[in-house]
Length: 153
Image (cartoon, rainbow, N blue to C red):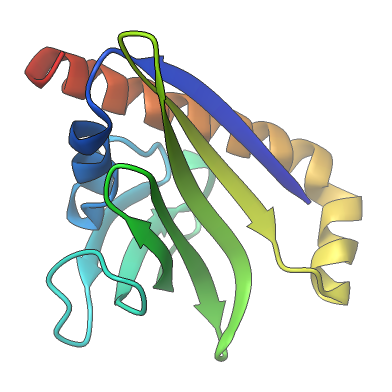
């Protein structure tokens, strides 16, 4: 009930982190989340900050908002958040950045909550959703790579 994708970027870890932790820019990168905004007075990434993302599932629909809470936030290294429903994390998404060669390796990952409803969902539809998530993460990272290498690399 988890997966990840890694892409090498010829740019600094700080430049990559600045792009991927600015949730207001997600619409430029993600094939599913086309906009996001900070909530409750937050203006940028910090552990505990909340934001909401506007999602078009599978790039087709349904369209809905998700509320998210930042769970990890270390400039140049990590940015992660939980998708929250009824006060509980149902899915976790994150990015890890590691220095490598002339730039850094950036990993996007997801991990579903370890709950019975999620286990049932994953056993029935995980094969198709997992493929969609992998493709979406690859697309997101390739779009970030293109931008950061153009501006920082």
